[in-house]
Image 1: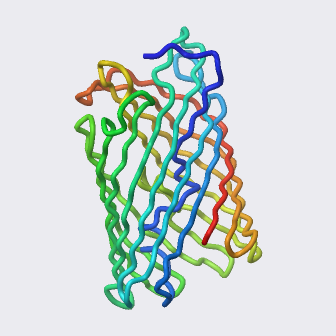
Image 2: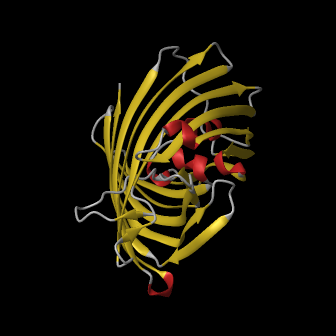
Image 3: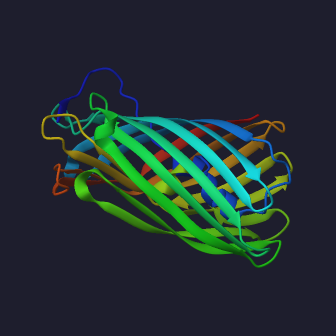
Amino acid sequence: MHTRSSSKILKLSLLALSMQLPAIAMAAGPPPGSGSGWRTTLTAVYAGQGNADLDNSRGQFSVDSGIVQFETARRIGQQWFTGVSITYAEDNYNFSDLNGVSPWNDIRSLQFGVSMRYLASEKWTLFGLPILRYTAEKGVDLDEGREIGLLAGASYRFSDKLTLGPGLGVFTGFGGEEDIFPILLVNWDITDSLSLETGKGTAASRGPGLALKWRPASQWEFGLAARYEKTRFRLAGIAENIGEDKAVPVVLTANWKVNQKFSLTALAGVETSGALSVEDSDGNRLTKLSYDTAPLVGLVASFKF
């Protein structure tokens, strides 16, 4: 437990709905072009969660969120596609009315991923994405919050408008907990301007989600997206406890493609079904607090080069 400072605390969290998870996007999407060069994207995210009331009148907390992600990918031959991504984020929590005590303060996260996609046939695509992730409170060696994960699956292209497929995510790391969750690969062009697809997000590594998108013009895209998220991190202190924050964000998005290389996305919605918990170093739960629905806003900038 930590004494809360009087200065404003910022929370930077991986926002699943605003970032692209390369393996899922590649597996569910159409085959890449014939070019063999590297395609690189740099993305920056800011998001803010308003005050959320903790249950039993235990207090409130608010969140400011941000992330920076670098990813590059290329096609190798006719059947292979590979990519590399590096993501850094900080999660800084602002708690109030908890008798001057906060369960945690600033959380850092560093993630590395290598994606592989194989075009097994005209219809079938296989993919795999091993992930190495470090998540810990500031003051703790990031290596203490190491997790190793794998996302893998297959997709089947029923037509030029519909691709579906099952997948599985497995993560293991500190606290002895193993996270296993299903992935549904979806890329369905319902009409020329309306589509349903697997949500693009690093936080797909935090859980599954879907996005409904409407493109009324070539430069504009609007969407409704939802996802289940769970984040675990090593806490500071001699007890080496583990913190967890999980929720279901639901957001409306508006994307403006400024030009071929630069786009902006604004989002607004709510965090629902949220809960904070603390476990000991062996993964035994010490406390859990649910929190009420909270407003959520954000901005995403993406550069391609």
